[in-house]
Image (tube, rainbow, N blue to C red; front, side):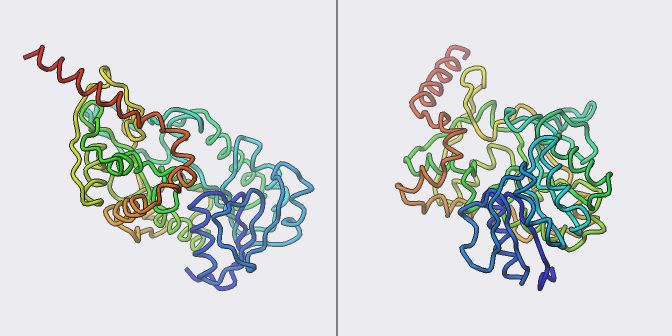
Length: 348
């Protein structure tokens, strides 16, 4: 990407992907402006123009409406009305708006359980990659997309949506790989695999997600009017992912298959329906090729989690603990394994 002098507005840049994108843009020589809720993870440099304010307040948006931008990347659109004040402020002043969306448009609202429907017809149980045109479920994420498309249809600006799979990697405070690494650090030797661990949940390494955003900024005409799924090139099963985490840490971990009816583990990857995203459009229209392989991404993530100091685990991974902390009840897990062993013995 030729970023020298590119004027980019980041709206509500929160989280590791926003921080990594900001750093990449600065390295490329872009002029970066941040508005709204700004993550403390963003590079601490005076070269970033920061504007505090609430996107719902038209007066707070006045400063960004006084300038013009080659592109705006929106990390904080929520609901049908989320894009509306921004659309009014940026009307005719931006070359492309990139809304960072989510795979959850296929599964429901942002607070829906981790599930998605990507099956089509009688497939014999095999997952079908979900294209951008697949049926959607109502939810906050879909409402935000509708708000963006309404703004585009009204002539406010060109627009596109990137539907990111769950993001993982160093710095991602909700990275699900802690489910395995936390056990290894606690010297656990077993892990429950619900129903054998065959579940599939697409993921995307943080650097790959950033690269997809940069490709979008580099191809505004090709991106305009389209939604793109963003994920890694391969989707491992839950069992393979757990084994990969252990191998990256240089440890052994025994997966124990337990029926979910015996132990309904609160597992961050144990989705009831496979979530596999079709990446064809991203590759064909934007020429996307992932810079980091899933294997390298997993290794880097596991090393980062393994090296976190004990006192840093809770504050750094606070979003993870809020959502999946109850999945680390090791006593309950051991009891479930023991119950299942008794049941198996009775069945013999």
